Length: 358
Ligand code: SF4
Image (tube, rainbow, N blue to C red; front, side, top):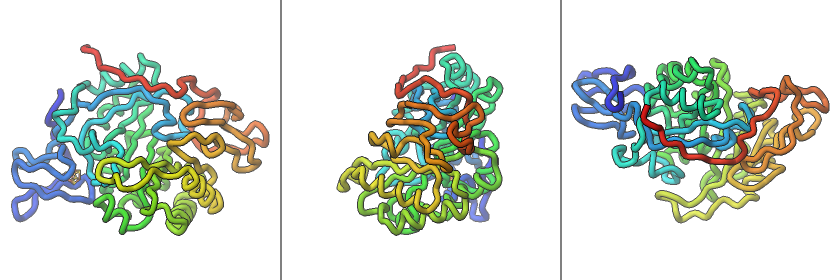
């Protein structure tokens, strides 16, 4: 099962190369070459996925770690990734996985059915495709998602949203929730720091909002001096409210020096709070700080009356003031998201899982 897998989104060019059509990078490959993501390759005149069924490891996380604050709060999610990425962020916080040359890190292997069964047996409500971008292993992720749905397990994509329209539609048909990393709000930042483009990511966000029922939230990692200006946050959050509406939660997350960007300091908590204030001021109803301790900045407040609905400190839930229908117990206003009558009790634990032999 594990290893090379045929794929759908590619076509033959007049010059004899084969173009991968999964993401806007549009890699054009000669026989034997690999794409920018390193895990999609040309073999026998077609594009194959070389990491099907193989993983860099499994871990049970709190769903808040994805981060998703409005999707089954307090529940456990079985998380895994593979290898490779279709962006080239100099600040990557997962570079050992995303930039690995696959074989050294893909220690675990599991069939879609086995992952779904493990998730169920371990008490996880969902499975997340994370650590590296599922765009590059979409065939494996889709098969895992189908197996999960057979057992009533939800599916979560953690992605940068850098994807072409046709595979995007095929991929999100199988997802229940997503966290999309909006890395900045200028083309210059995407070009210089991510080796990518902003426009396709905005298209993915609009697609999710207007053409799917996928619950999604946005993460924005703020890097001092690069993408954290008042003007950029103001423009981004205005765009979110104008084009996606006020109910898409936004997470402003702290950067730590890593990979090829070690010359920048960690993000000061005040920068995160400032971004959150700008978002709230522009009409984003649910804006959060991330990767820091900040009960006020991480708790969910009712957009209508201001009462605390879900208290949170990092990944730990506190008071819960939503009724069984996901409404504020104080004023009855609905809180956008996917809620159950009671929160989960997983807490902030993180538990690595080794896939046992079947
Ligand atoms: S998914 Fe990989 S191979 Fe395909 S276009 Fe994107 S980077 Fe290139």
